[in-house]
Length: 287
Image 1: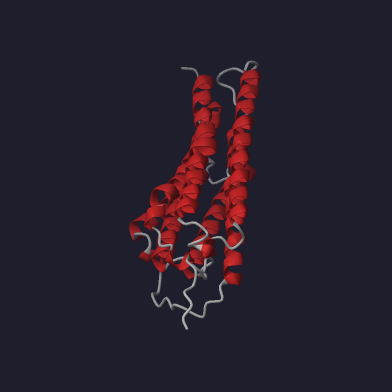
Image 2: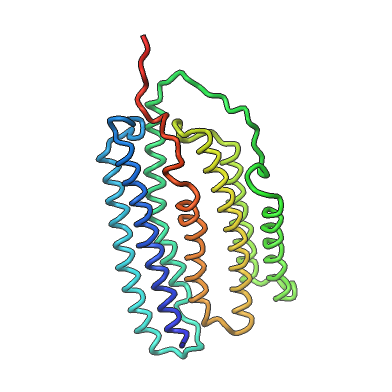
C-alpha cells in the first residue's frame, strides 16, 4: 500500500471521526437532555430559552457539515497536488493540523454558548441557599501520582530528545519546538489549577458531578500532555531520519488521538444518565 493511499484512509478517518461521529454523539446527547428534562419541569436548565438551545445545536451541526465538505475538497486537492511529487517527498504535511484545528471550532462554539448559559444561570440564581463544600482538594485527589510522574517523564524525555538529536546546539527550529512544548504544559497546568481551586461556573451543578468533571478534565489534560510529548519526539525523529513524507499521516493520527482524549473521553466518562438534575427544577415556594 502506497503512502498516499494510507494517507487517504487516515485522513478520511479524521473527517469521519471529528466532524461526523463525535458531533453526532454530542447532538444526540443534547437532544436526550432536552427530551428527558423539559423546560416545564427543569426551567433552570434553560436560562435563555429552548429555542436558543436548539439554535446552538443547528449551528453546531451546520458547522460540522461544512467541515466535512471542506475535508473532502482538501483530500481532492491533495490528490491532484501529489501527482507532481515523488512518494518519498514531503508535501502538505501541515494540512491535517490546520484542518484539525478547524474541526475543534464547533466544540469551542458550544463551549462559549455553554459559558453564556452559565452566566445567565448565575444571574438568575436568586436562591439564598448556599452549600459549603468543605472538602479540600489537591491534584492527587483526582489522579494517581504514577500518572503525573509518567507525564513529567515524557515531558523531560521529549525535551532531552530534542537536545540530543542536535547535540545540544540550540537551532531556531529546536527553540520553537521546546518553547511550544513548555507553553502547552504551562497552559495545561493553569487549566488544572483553575479547575481544582476555581469557583463553580454552573451554579446548579451537583457537587458529585462537579468532582467528576474536574477528574475528567485533569485526566484528559495529563494524557494529552503525554501525547504532545510523543508527537514532538516522533516529528523530530522523522525529520532526522528522512521520514518526513510520513509527517502528514502522523499529523492526522495525532489530531484524531486528541479528539479521542477530549470529546471521546468526555462522552464515555460523563454520562447523562448518571448526572443529578434536581437543582435545575423550579423552586418550591413555602408559605
